[in-house]
Amino acid sequence: MDCYDACQAEVIEENIKGSKDNLVTNGKLCVNFAQLLKENNLKTPIFNNQEISLDESLKILSKKLKDTNSSNTLFYSGSGNLGILQSSTKNFFTQYGSVLTKGSLCDGGGGLGIEQGRVSVVNPPIEKLIDSDIILVWGRNFSVTSPHMYNLVKDKIFVTIDPIKTDIAKKSKIHMQINPKTDYELALLLTRFTNMQDMEDEEFLEEHSEGSDWFFDITRNRPVVSYEATTGIPLSQVNELLELIENKKVAIIVGLGVQKYFEGAQIMRCIDSFAAYLGVHKKDSGGVWYLSDSEYGYENQLKIEAKNKKVSIPQVDFSSYDLVFIQGANPVVSAPNTKSVIEGLKNSFVVCFTTTYNDTCEYADLVIPSSSFLSKRDVRLSYGHEYKAFSQIVENAYENTINEYDLTTYLIEEFGFKALKHEDDIINYYKNTNVVYEEFETFEFIEEVDIEPLYKHKTSSNFYLITGKSKNSLNSQFTVDNNVYLHPSTGFKNEDKVMIKSAYGEATFSVKISEDIKEECAFFYAGNKKTNYLTPNKEDEESFSAMFQEVLIEIELS
Ligand SMILES: Nc1nc2c(c(=O)[nH]1)N[C@H]1C(S)=C(S)[C@@H](COP(=O)(O)OP(=O)(O)OC[C@H]3O[C@@H](n4cnc5c(=O)[nH]c(N)nc54)[C@H](O)[C@@H]3O)O[C@H]1N2
Ligand SMILES: Nc1nc2c(c(=O)[nH]1)N[C@H]1C(S)=C(S)[C@@H](COP(=O)(O)OP(=O)(O)OC[C@H]3O[C@@H](n4cnc5c(=O)[nH]c(N)nc54)[C@H](O)[C@@H]3O)O[C@H]1N2
Ligand SMILES: [Mo]
Image 1 (tube, rainbow, N blue to C red):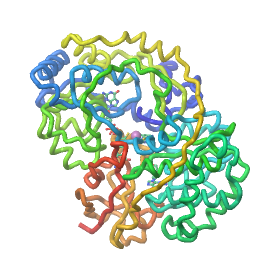
Image 2 (tube, rainbow, N blue to C red):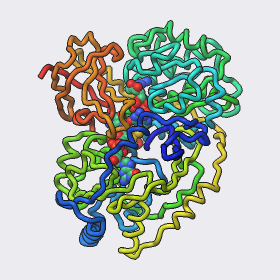
Image 3 (tube, rainbow, N blue to C red):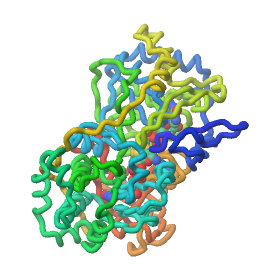
Image 4 (spheres, helix red, strand yellow):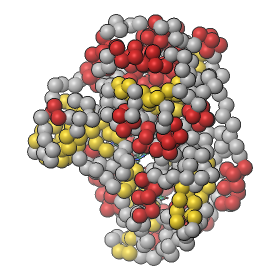
C-alpha cells in the first residue's frame, strides 16, 4: 500500500502474518493490511458497462490507442501501491507519447522545501530515530499513519504540533494546538528562543551551513509576543519545549499537514532551517524525517528518456484529452475539485486500470482489473524508512486480471516499442543494490520568507478546512467516513446536516461534534467523498502540487 511503513508479510501455515525479518514490520500487521486482505477485488474487465474477457479488453485498449493521436492522451497514475514494477506502464505511455503529470497530490511542496536547503529528500537511517530521546511530531499523525515506525519508538517523549488533538497529540508531553498555516511562524519563533537560550549549534552553523545570519534576521522582524495571537501557541509552551529538548537528542518527524498550502515549500524550509539552527542534522542520533524520495540512491530500472509534455497533477482537466489512462488512482475522491474532475471524465474516453471498482470506475468506458498484490512479484521501497520489501507470488492471479508489467509488455509488443528489462533483472538489481545514506555537505538556510497567512483573509464566519488520514482507511480505500468534525463551541449538534461552501464548490455533510478539533477548524478524514468538492484545483507556488488546505469555508444548516 501507499504508506510510510511499507510492511512485509509472510504466509505461515496458510495464514498471512507480519514478517519478523523486516525491522519495521516486526511481526505485526496493521488495520489497513487486514482490510486489504478483505477487499473485494475486480475479476472481470468492463466495457460500456458490459463484462468482457481480458483478451477483448486488451484489444479494445490497443485499438483505441492506435486510433487516437497520442499527444491527445493522458497517463495519470496514483500511488495505489508502492511497488516498483507498478510503474512499468509509465514506460509504455512515455514511448507512446502521452501527456504525463508533474507535481504531486501528496508531499510535493514539502519535498521541494527540503531539496532547496540540502539537495535530496532523504530520511536519516531509522536507527537514528530509535536512538533519539525526544520526538517532535510536526503536522503528522505519527501513530496512525506509520503505526509500525511508531511501535519502534513508542516509549519516547513526544511533542506534537497539530491543530487537532490526534492520537499522537494525546500521547504527547506537550501538544501545541497550532492555528493552521502558521507553522513557519512557529519555526521562526522557536529559532529566536533557541538563540536566546544559547542553544544553537555554533559548530554546525559555521562549518556546515550558509545563510544562518539572514535566517536569524527574519526571526527578529516581529516582537516575540505578537506570535502568540497568530499561532495560537502561548510563549510559556515554547519555553517548556526548549527546556525539554535542551541537551537532548532530538528527532523531528514532519508530515503532510504543514505543507498543504500555496507556499508549502517555504513553510517546510522554515521548519528544516529551525532544525538546522538547533543542530539536529549532523548529530549521531535524531534528525529530520519527512516523506523521503523512496527511490533515492537507486537507478530507475524502468525509466526511458523522452520529452513528453507534462501537466500539473492538481490542474489536470480530463476533458481536454481524447483518452485518459488512470492507474492505481481514484481522482473522483482524492483529487482536488471533484465537480470539475467528474465533468472532465464525462467528456473523455476513460480507461481505469485498478484492483477494485472505485468511484472513478463509474465514469470509465473501459475498466481493466489489475491482479492483486498476492499474485504479483515486486519490490517495494518506502518513503518512511530505508528497508526494502520483496513480494513473491503466493496465489494465482484471477484469469481475467493482468499485472502492470504484463500489460506493459503486451502494449510494447503491439506497438513495436523498446522492450522493458526482464522482471528478474529489475528485481535482482534492487536486491543487490544497497544505498548508503550520505549526509549533505552544506545546509542552505531560507533567507527570505514571503507567505500570505490564511488568517489575514479569514472572517469571523469562516472555518479552516483540515484533512488528515484515518486509521480505518487508506486514502479513498476501505472504510471511509463522510462526516465533518466540529468543535462544540461552533453551536452545531451531532447529526446536523450542513451545507459547506468555499470559493471552489459546495457540498452537504453530516456533523460530528468533537473536543479534539480546534475551534475554528472543520476536520474531514482523507477519503471523505465530499471534501474535495471544496478544494482548489490549482497548483502551489513552486512544486506543481496540490494545496488542499489553501481555502476558507462557510458552514450553515441545510
Ligand atoms: N491509516 C492510514 N495511514 C496512512 C494513510 C491513510 O490514508 N491511512 N495514507 C498514507 C499516505 S498516502 C500518506 S501521504 C501519509 C500521510 O500521513 P501524515 O503525514 O500523518 O498526513 P495527514 O494525516 O494528511 O496529516 C497529518 C496531520 O497534519 C495536521 N495538520 C493539518 N493542517 C496543519 C497545519 O497547518 N499545521 C500543522 N502543524 N498540522 C496540520 C492534521 O490535523 C493531521 O493530524 O500517511 C500514509 N499512511
Ligand atoms: N482533501 C484531501 N485530498 C487528498 C488527501 C488529503 O489529505 N486531503 N491526501 C492526498 C494524498 S496524500 C494522496 S497520496 C492521494 C491518494 O490518491 P490516490 O493515489 O488516487 O489513492 P486512492 O484514493 O487510495 O486510490 C488508489 C486506487 O488504487 C487502486 N489500487 C490499489 N492497489 C493497486 C494495484 O496494485 N494496482 C493498480 N492498478 N491499482 C491499485 C485501488 O483500488 C484504489 O482505488 O490523495 C490525496 N488527496
Ligand atoms: Mo500520500
